[in-house]
Amino acid sequence: MSFNQKMSVCLATYNGARFLKAQIDSVLSQMRENDELVVSDDGSTDDTLNLLQSYGERLRLVNSTRVGGVVKNFEVVLNAAKNDLIVLCDQDDVWLDGRLDLLRSKLQDVSFLMVNATVTDSALVPTGQDIYDFVNFRPGFFRNFISNGYVGCCLAFRREVLNIALPFPSNILWHDWYIALVAELMFSVARIDMPLALFRRHDMNASNTGERSRRPFFRKIAVRLWMLLAIAIALTRWNRNKLRGAF
Image (tube, rainbow, N blue to C red):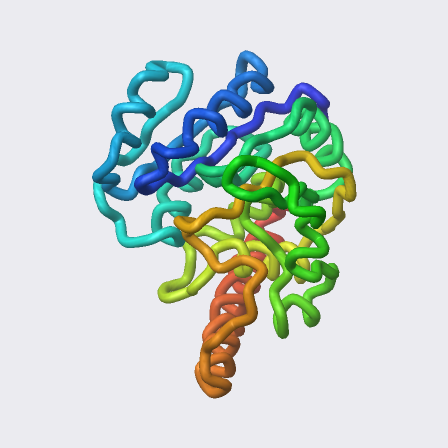
């Protein structure tokens, strides 16, 4: 494997014009010539599309119509990614200098990474927490099956993980939880402790990351049973690829 492997940064947007420019600029400033920033927009009604289009060929907009939520939106953009190294990107964070080069280097040795970030308020003022504290992150399949600590905007992985994860099984609630469990069960996983982004929390965040789930107990059980089915589907793909010598 080469340190010059190309990266696909996969950004899913929806009504994110308020903070989007700062994030896109922080990504583009780190990309190499053959890297790509791929964007799927879920039918935004604010100025998001105009902002995306203002970047011209510096990013690749693959969808601008309603696909039905965060999971579907990320599935669209991940399906469009062309390169071997995949980095998930949210619309309201800011990446710190050196993030992409460090991820590119670390992904030569492992298939999947969880990356730390500094938690901030809407004005990017640090709250005193990092993302590992914020979500009580601990690696391991069973730990994260019971209580997910993975955060989508902190994930990067090699294409072999994506090949098993896609297409997403129907009705999964969180793409990051599903992809992380696939990686924990079937691939090599590592963490980066250095914060490499500013994780912005504000009143319009798409997810409730860091908050205790309010779902009824039996609903939580049903969600995990459904996730087990999704993982079983992924395991079938993994075994099929092994038999074909794809790994």
